[in-house]
Amino acid sequence: MPRFEFSEGTSNKFWEIELSGDSFTTRWGRIGTEGQSKTKAWDSAATAKKEYDKLVASKLKEGYEQVDGGAEGEDDDGDGGGAVNEGLEGKIAQALDDPQGYAVYADWLQQQGDVRGKLITLQLAATQKDDAAAFRAAEKLLTENAEALWGEELAEQLESGALSADWRWGFVRKLFVGQKDYDQEVDPGELLDKALDRPCCRFVREVVIGLSDLDSGQANPGTAVAVLARRKPASVSSLFLMDFEYPDETEISWSNAGDLGALWKALPQLTQIRLRTGAEFTLGALHVPNVRQFTLETGGLDAKNFKRVVDADWPALERLEVWFGQDNYGGTCTANAVATLLARTDLPKLVHLGLRNAEFTNELIPLLERSPVLKQLKTLDLSMGCLTDEGARALVEHQAAFAHLSSLDVSQNGLSDDGQRLVAKVAKKVEVGSQREFDDDDSRYTAVGE
Image (cartoon, rainbow, N blue to C red; front, side, top):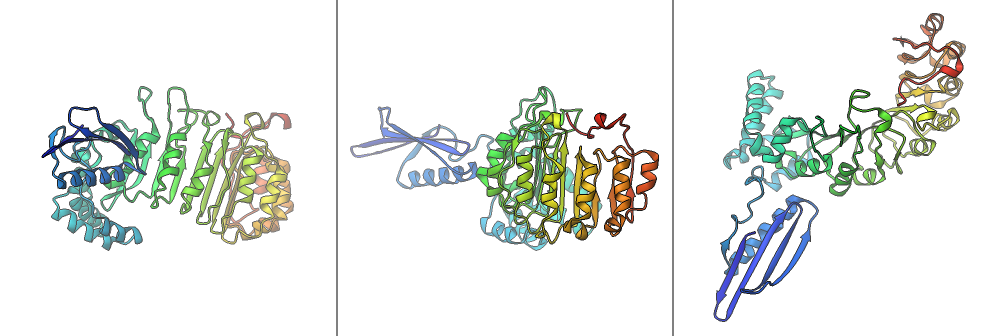
């Protein structure tokens, strides 16, 4: 802990400060006493570091001299991740896809001797001029400067695979955090929090959260959700909870997303949401006016959570996909619940609808035929469910309602060869793919349950 002392006349005082993540503790008093102490927390580690530096500078200006501890403002890694110009970053934030702002920042960073200046220049050349040599040079620079860009701890996690990043123009565009090896002890939320403190993660656009405990097959993203809800990163437009391979890494029903309600309030700018989870989660009220794509993958979707989908406010929605799952894994939705969604007339931009992995696929056909939503769709996905020849005959009976579709996906259902021939011309393109065999009605099951 850095210690500063002030001695003048009869005044003999000390002041100490210790920085720890998003908080710091100060201690002060007369030399020779224990003094008093106070801990203060901030919104982020970056803010805490900034306030830390201000206090240290203030004490030095008052005449205090450092007598012990590390250098003023030194962080745990001995490196803060590089120079930062808040004014130039503010201009980038106003136009995240305009390369000009990044080019100006690259010039400033190179003047500061920051390696990210060269990185931006190389990556701009790689994308704008299709310069393969610049791409290779940028990749080499990232490898050789991993510790400078990320700090020692995160650089180790980068090597282990628990952290990965896709870069664009000197900044991380896509960030993944999650356990990738059985002997790792990784908290995705802690990794995410530390990563978002790095200057290179100032403009993260996509966040992907993986497993929190590979050994037990748990994928609960609770700590990462809490970090996102607290930090409210304004640049994030795409979110994927939880990215894992099923059943190889864990069964889908073993991975429960928890309470997600705070996320939608914290990240109203999201345009893409993808959620993979078992039945034990709370979706919360979906006020997501900017979302264009929403995907909910479950092995068992309960009716309460689906009602949140039905009632959601999303005027910009273009693509909606829901996996309903099986009753014995928590799936309590019915075709009648879907009928409420299909009756909506306030989804003007919706062009793709996926009603997948449903036990009641046959029952959806007449509901779709009467739906105002169907008329505006370009593609419809009824795959992975329990569509049988009975449903195929219903599709043919109502073929006029489906004929405008550019694509209809009925793969991984239970159609016989005859059933596949029946649906072959229902839409402009019909994807039948592989089908599953059911002995009778009682043996039907969705493609994904456990």
